[in-house]
Amino acid sequence: MEANIPGCAALLGSFAVLVAIRLPITFALVGSSLIAGLAIGLPLEAVWQRMIQGVQSFSLLAVPFFILAGEIMLSGGIAQRLVDFSDVIIGRIRGGMAQVNILSSTFFGAVSGSTTADVSSIGATLIPVMVKQGYGRDFSVSVTVTSACQSMIIPPSHNMIIYALAAGGVSAGRLFLAGMVPGCLLGLSLMAVAHVQTLRHGYPRGKAYTFREALIVTKDSLLGLMTIVIILVGVTSGYFTATESAAIACAYAFAVTFLIYRNIPFAAIWEILYRAGKTLAMVLSIIAAANGFGYLLSYLRIPGMATAWMLATTDNPALLLLMINALLLFLGCIMDVAPLIMIVTPIVMPVIKSIGMDPVHFGIVLLLNLAVGACTPPVGLTLFTGCAVGRIPVEKVMLSILPFYAAMAATLLLVTYIPPLAMSLPNAFMP
Image (cartoon, rainbow, N blue to C red; front, side, top):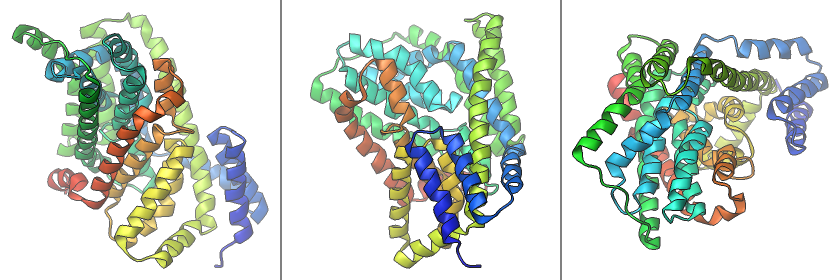
């Protein structure tokens, strides 16, 4: 079957135009799919059916549970407890509040899986404190924004569930394990940059806790941290699936928030359910629309053409991975995470398989690329959220955030070209 050039032009061209005129991404995906279907004479019912099939997946049941668990813990005071626990561990060193910010995001990412929730909660808590202690507002926002992106890589990330679906059934448990080391490596690289910057600017030391105070704070925060333990131990041991682990995490978050911490009244559950439902509606609509778009991509043989072009350009695996990373970084700057996962994965996967790269390894590389894109203009939602929380224009943050971009890029290259960084844990615990 020959490539349908007019159909490809109709699909990709209309999508580019609709995005350029700032149509919401869901409508841009649906609109370009329908335009391409009409252009090639494809029954539009087939496109609608593919969209519906896109959200009829058992694996996607994990997404609403993870979103709801994150919303419950966000509202129940878990963020402040994680900040206090991080302060006990590392806050006493020079520039300690910046390190607390990064470590808090690591912990919060492990219980929420959402960069926006991370920035909104940790940022609202720590940015004013950092500014009051003498840290630059631009530096405080830069630390908050970049460290929040760990949430995409450290489990439980609902973006991992979306990738597992888009990649054709990759194990969510192996993805969870594969994200642990790269996520921690990203946090350590950001800590190193923050430490250099704090020494350069002479930022102050944090509070030193007594042993009794440290014990009380640690005991109070461990209940929240147990969420990630429940998920990882349950999935890797085979006791339950990722979907079942998400449901258990949701029930556990409810019990901890409303029966133990009790910082909010039970009536707040309705507002929590509303916010979770709103987020879920956006995620599922994007997945449905992207599935229809992906059907047209496959029908028009665009993945095959992209694979042939890349392999014709070079057969060197290292150069191919560099090209793919450059493409993902560019696309991550102009598109949201969920639709990009659904669109790019089927296009790039044949190339990945041709060079013998494990789809689990590629999933982590993909998410690292999108983590950089999430805090990069012009569409970086995490960056804009952080600037809104920190009350500073985006342009005033860009100079101070550049060293953190360098740390993220270095982590990306290490994980790309040293597979054991991602694959050692899944190969050891879920071979």
